[in-house]
Image 1 (cartoon, rainbow, N blue to C red):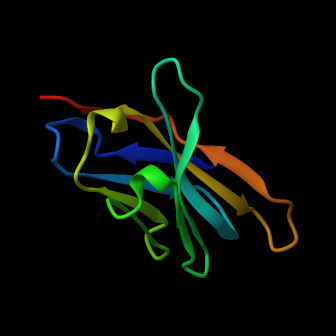
Image 2: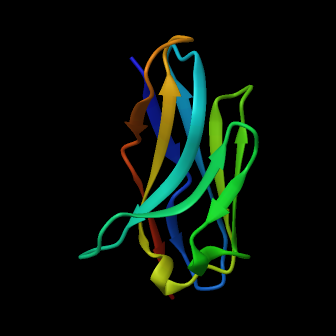
Length: 121
């Protein structure tokens, strides 16, 4: 069974930094893309940052220059380095991965349980 487990959330003051991690466990042939979503109270879940298996990255406009997504394929771990945090970054952050369980298998999407990030003084 494939599981995504996030860690690293918490309470931080405006201007501070946090690093989120997401470790993928289970039998997977390949991970195609991994990304971070977030959902603030009363708002829809939105894509924050994504990284492909060849290292290509993309960011939501409001986090460009502040957040950095990276992955360590040897550890099956995804990271999100968040700097210059603002109150509007407060949300539950979710790890998401699209993977194949076998070489010719279909793409399957997986979600983590979410980790709370609160930016407040």
